[in-house]
Image (cartoon, rainbow, N blue to C red; front, side, top):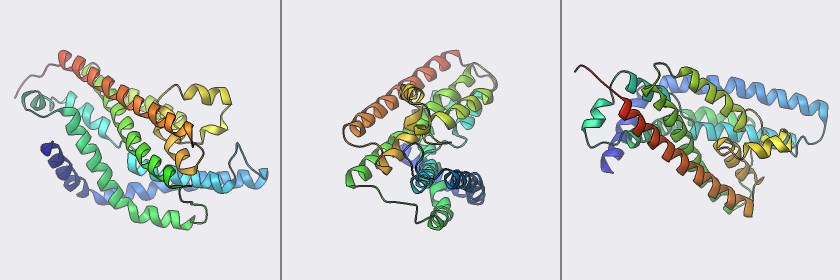
Length: 266
């Protein structure tokens, strides 16, 4: 396990080399967020009252929390890098050394999240401060603890799904189309674009048979107190189940892919 902690340390150092890139990406990511907040403020100005159980303050809080969860859990370019390792033959070294490629990439993923969080903390804090009267603390200690647990599970779920998708590089030369399709579906079905409560009840219920709501909507709803009691613990159990299934699927794709893999040259 010590070697993977070393990977995390090396990854943090490498990522902080590109801190200006991280800072620029963070600043520009606020543009669509600000546009979305402006859109909903306009909608509420004409609507008056709550929409799908959300007041205007709750809706803005939702998007601010989405920004926070996204910074802490999003997979940024890890799937592209994994696919490139396979395509260019860089994984050959992991087949010859006592290093598990999945845990190696997971270490790099968490190092990237730590570095990105360190760089994005100041601008994100300033942005949230501008909307501070909308940003609320967790409803209670249980919600706070459950939110933190769900946050870790969300990060693992996003990583394992992305890792499994990148394994397609064993069979196809270019995986970008598959990654874009998955990202587009996740953006809507996870609650990133809007709370799933605005969807028709049957569609929202159907989405909860997929892992996507547990990648964004679920942890944010825990924080806001929208999910509590028995539903909270049941949701955490299901989220953990999806993490285990995604991990098993990632392992399956790796094992099948390695059998298909062939590298030539030195």
